[in-house]
Length: 207
Image (cartoon, rainbow, N blue to C red):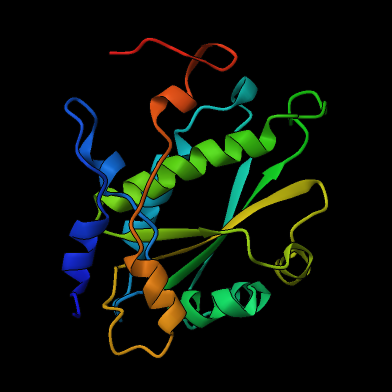
């Protein structure tokens, strides 16, 4: 039975938990994008959320290179993706590569938490995008050195994920059967007892 994009979106939402902001449960990573642009104004607000993430010494090491479909930047990012990721992410209206400065600007010392800080900013980015009704999909599957060379990213920056951004599309009628199967697969997460401890391996008493 075919499902619409809206029905799949409802299917993929995590169960609501009283007191937890709904956006945390509504965010998920679609691989199908509607033929609909994301405006620069909307993207500015998405990046504004990322801008206010916390960081070590307030170093704000994150940098994002963003390409809208049809731009040279978009093509350079798309060309760095693995073939599998190109097959679906290349249809997104926006592609992003995140990176982070590996040294603090205030003293030149190594920032061992740069990639952590980039991850925090990107989490803010994805949640703000979800609040706007956008879907984001973060990808490790790309050639970082190819992207670095094509986008002119200095060596003193470490690369994080590539990110596809857009409005969720309808997967049915698409030839990529394996991608459709992944789209419909149920979501799951480890229970809190497996990730929050009072001592190593001992579940913390919560709730």
